[in-house]
Length: 193
Image 1: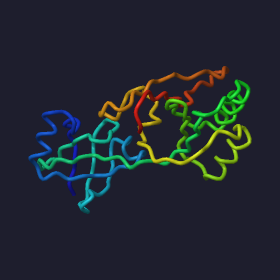
Image 2: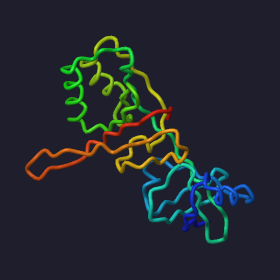
Image 3: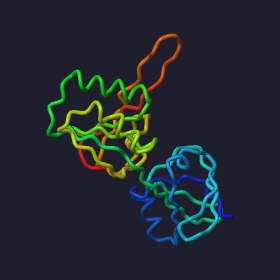
Image 4: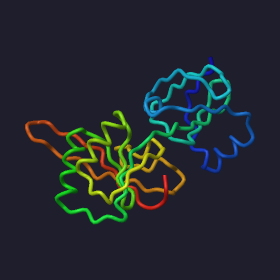
């Protein structure tokens, strides 16, 4: 089994890009869960057995080195998101608060991109649609879109490395009685995911 245990950098970094360009590198596609684990056993896209042992979350385009010198380029599998498009809508503060309360009670992660709200599909589509349908004004269209899993990261860091988005951590809030947590609200400025 090939074991990648050294983080070299990102494929957009000049030195790393040069190393990848001149090598017979392997590629691995990781799920959102796998990219956050320090140890993963998986396969490369060409079917080689691969172990990844790195103490960091991995991003799309990260490059690892195996003990035999093989470079491994990480790609992230896109995740599906429910998108609420408020661009042509005048949502009242009451409607916005009711919607926020409903999705907050379900602990859905949220990313805001321009006048759109994105929620990762973590439940059945039908249940998610039912939750928002009762609270959305009729002029707010919804759709599904595949986005990078880093869209919903809660560390406030732009993991795209390409500069097309800027992710900011809006922080969390406290429910009192020692129960505090972050609801995962991200604001994405500019660019498409």
